[in-house]
Image 1 (cartoon, rainbow, N blue to C red):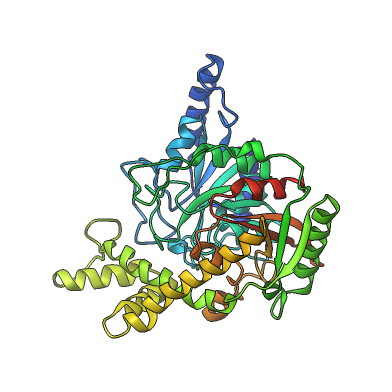
Image 2 (tube, rainbow, N blue to C red):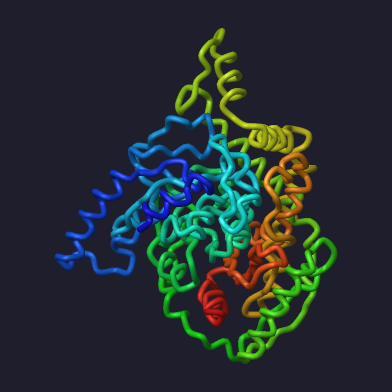
Length: 447
Ligand code: GLN
């Protein structure tokens, strides 16, 4: 069924960088045998999945949608993907993304843009745009994405699907090609919150191969799938609903808040300070970490190497100049600048201090509220070709998502309607660290 749908829509939508038809069908047969023998009994056994192309898959192309990794076939599989395989998942292929997960539209991919299945003239969001479009267009039953500053939640909102970023440290980053290591987190993208809870339960694990992986008390998420939000305290940060927010998005979220209230939740507005500092702090920290993480792509150890060069330094320079796209280069330069001596204190250290203050502001909020409601993005999906010419404006679109990563919090985006153009609107539900179950509970009350 997944391949039949891929045959119907992939030429238009372009969700995938790699489709592994043969491998998937062979694997499906093997899994079916294990199901028949009663060896595999879990809910994900035999269910086809698509994996974002920044997660290593053994012997399967893993490009990060970059030219520099155009021929990279890893020798191992990312821990989160392995956890899915143990549960009997069938991998259909690897999904398109913004190059190295840097972007909000999936237009910075070296392999061409992905389109929004709801309207092919619009972007699917990013950077996990391929994963979200594949789920929305039913080219897979669910997908994995990664979220450094909103890359699961924002494209989920734009594509009308449900996507969840877990608490930092919940899903192993082993085998996830690093962008901003202190912010990156893998999470599920699916048709509803029930599926997300099941998938999260499967991919989350304590992994000694990732030093930031956390041993959680429990990995049960599905028991939170109950409609009961009675007595839950839900906060709406006033600062998130001011200037710059599309009125249709705002109205849809207030309408959703009313639904929760009608079901017995207590909904209140409150002030969440420091919102205006989230974007600068995020872009300084993410770019700093990216500039360090991406130094390994030098034409020697991985992927693309320039054809002609004179000496080692010229080889590095030409390989990187030709292998990386514009947006990636911009971030490497910004990151190198803020880490350079003389500027470190003024930018990087200051950003880290801001991050700590943002965490404190959330701590204060969660002393009062179980979950927070917020937009996932100030607008619905923009038209293709409108965002890249003005990177600063594009960065501002991340205003509602990045602080969640800075504070390490879990967040989900669920569909709450469409705008007058028929494009989906997403609502974010944000929880305190390790409070995924509260988020799932609130989100499930819409199912
Ligand atoms: N849009 C943000 C960025 O470009 C977030 C990307 C992400 O979460 N990977 O950095």
